[in-house]
Image (cartoon, rainbow, N blue to C red; front, side, top):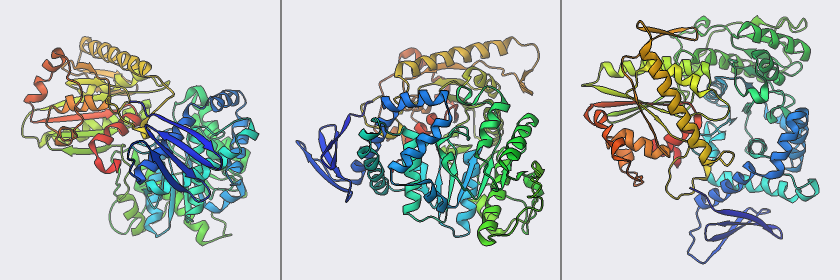
Length: 578
């Protein structure tokens, strides 16, 4: 499981020891040299892995972690520190003004909104940059040019340029290096400037006001997707506190848009917009837009994507207006700063329609069919997103089951991370009537390998497995209680759900691959041919698989964590690992 590497400096050259191989990187010319007691092939993959392994050292950098702890008490220091790191890398805030940025935050749907926006503007022929988080399979997914993750060679090249400049100035700056997300944000800015994109779509990491992406001074337009309760230890434990943080991306004179929000959230956003001096408008419903050729079709599944698509239309439309009509006043009431009014609808062009229909965003309401097994993948990790996931899964799985030639088994593969209330999310999943509920940590596989892109050193394996056992106990408790209810329905939040008639078996596995291989029972050739067979499971566990073996189909919902979904996609979609 562990990836063995060490980084140090030899004069002007950085050296990386990866397993039994020493490789050095001349940052001036970004050339690569290798020396080893074993034959070491000179490959782009190895250079990329060195960069990712070095990047991972920033996850546990002691000075960085201490700095973050201090900054949480004085959050304004976060942006000051980010500006310092940016300048040490050779960039300035002024240079970011040339990126023509669209800045997007929110609790739920901000990534999908960015994906819609990027695809629309790319459809017009603009060269786009897109920075998002987290990644699913490979870290370079976070930095995209024209919708595609930057290549491994390009990632390694730009990584060592930025890392080298920061490392060279480390000692005179108290030994500090930027933490993982900060570094990637700086790297994204560097890549977009070097690759001369026409615009950059930047997704906020956490919050807004003190997020490191908020060093952006002059975005062209800002957007806020649906707000809810998440990251409470950092952002606050009420919707009002969270809304204040999200509204921190507003900039004076910069148009901003939001989707329909809970009233208490919208009040705070309006106050923030007035305080900062920007026009804030609420997006109309997607059905209110006009077209010349029928209804709007979305490339992303689920009714909850409609507000995201509407926000993307407003963001892309406004960006193009500001680019093509510089100096023209876009909103009639800008001087009065009438915040909170509804944004105007417009006729959606065929190019915009094409962009919406062709948008792809893996791991969100995604369906993969492998022979007799259908995987439903959604990285829902909040209560509201889990409600949407449950609705999408029940509707989509039912459609597939109506055309099945025989009985179909339903399996839940679940994990959650951080401070999230996994017990409450599992309660929402009970009415889906699963035959099995499987739990595993966000570890892709247990065999010795260096899967650097998906390593997380901020939580121990022991803690991850303990969380899985807690999730198993929560599921058994909720499943048992639902059996005791009188009547066929139960109330979950504001939704009335059918009580399941059967009680799901529960299992815990040590990694994602062993979970998938047990669920598939040899029916998925992708997993069978992977050549990564895990240790055999106990006979008592194997005996539970009889139902899966007898069915003509298996429907697997993978949810609770984008990291879990990414680990599953690593094994299920070979294209994402190339």
